[in-house]
Amino acid sequence: MKPDIDKPYTRVVWQDSAVAAPVLPPLDRSLSVDLCVIGGGFLGLSTALHAAEAGLSVAVLEAGEIGGGASGRNGGQVIPGLKHDPDDLVRHYGETDGERLVAFAGSTADAVFDLIAKHGMDVAHRRDGWVQAAHKPSTFHVASARAEQWKRRGANVAVLDADEIRRLTGAGGYAGGWIDRRAGAVNPLSLARELARVAQEKGAMIATGTTVTELAEQGALWRLATDLGHHIQAKQVMIATNAFSDALLPGLDRSFVAVNSFQIATEPLTGNAAAHILPDGQVVSDTRRVLLYFRRTAEGRLMLGGRGPLGGRAARTPLDWRHVEASLAEVFPDLGPVAISYRWFGPVSVTPDHLPHLHMPAPGVAAAVGCQGRGVGLQTALGAAFGKYFASGDPKSLPFPVTKLRPIPFHGWRQIGVAAMTGWYRLIDAVA
Ligand SMILES: Cc1cc2nc3c(=O)[nH]c(=O)nc-3n(C[C@H](O)[C@H](O)[C@H](O)COP(=O)(O)OP(=O)(O)OC[C@H]3O[C@@H](n4cnc5c(N)ncnc54)[C@H](O)[C@@H]3O)c2cc1C
Image 1 (tube, helix red, strand yellow):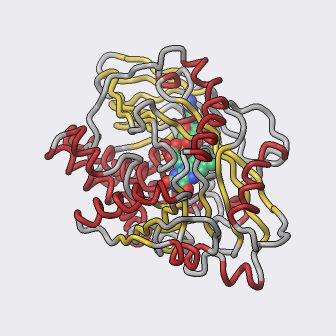
Image 2: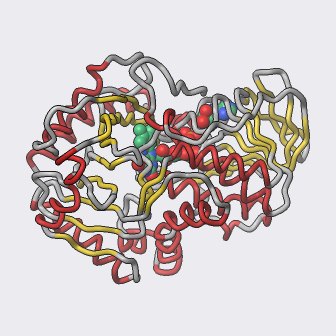
């Protein structure tokens, strides 16, 4: 499904600060490759880069533009770990597989910053950590237990009291929290574009403005048709369409719920606000179920994101951002009047168990969905793992078990229920 990155009220802040988009024309011929990747976000591009580095011939087909999906419109917070705590993962997957998965989850921010350094990518970034702030005293123990679990595994983390949180963030009303110094911030659209540039340098063919409309088995190979009338014959196929998945692989789009996340970016801060809000450059999210997340951009803007009122991709009005704008004033009571320069939103794929799901519905075809809003590090690292997998055929290259594709029962109702669920969670956040 083709995303719109530049509709009225939905201009993404990164559009005006990212490196130039690489020139990648639509596919104008039929071809034959080892691996065809569908989707030009972090997962598709990182898979392509690593598979090409490993010697495969690779084609990437992207319906819109590079990073036009979630990858070029997110908060750019590079946070290691999954939504589940390390000890929970070990309980769920057992000692050996669980600790292996925890090690992978703990390395996802490294994957991003190491790639930037290794390939000299032109991506504005800094690595000063992620603060998770407890929005009330009763969630402080959750944050400190999380820090303790990572510390036991050697991660550079620390518990913070309320005063330290206030000094680091400039935000009011938080009861404490923890800092994970493995984390950091990037300009995500630059990261997507630079992944494309490097993948191309490694030999991958990348076409934008090209939608894959059909995927069919052809003997031992796969045949993909595009909306422009050309075909690709591939030995292997990676479906990296995530929250923008459609009916290309039956059931994939019904195996998760797409939850919209809304963001705003202010004009560059000046004076007192510039000095006291996130002076050391950390990225922040809090412990609410309907979480708030914020950071500064390289230009000094304050960005804040959270859930909006609706699921779906219907036309937007500025009113849809009223919750995040109200949150900005609540979290930063001393901010004073400041212009909102950008408002935009995008879908996050959420699975019922809040874990990423890897599927291989037929030999040679793989898909992955469900990054739960943690995809900058996760999808980049997962792409490296998939690159190795496609080159070697070794399922041990993959950090998660491959599971059967299971559409969620009554998916349409679940999708409609997102709005109701969001309201319910807000209520729990306020009273629990
Ligand atoms: C508003 C917002 C804020 C977020 N903030 C953060 C954050 O701060 N930190 C973090 O870690 N994560 C964050 N996330 C999540 C993160 O952005 C995603 O997890 C990640 O970008 C997903 O990457 P991807 O490659 O899997 O999918 P995408 O980047 O969505 O790429 C999928 C691509 O597939 C293409 N496509 C779909 N169908 C077809 C087809 N048939 N043919 C060809 N192409 C097709 C789409 O055009 C799209 O470009 C946020 C997400 C949103 C929406």
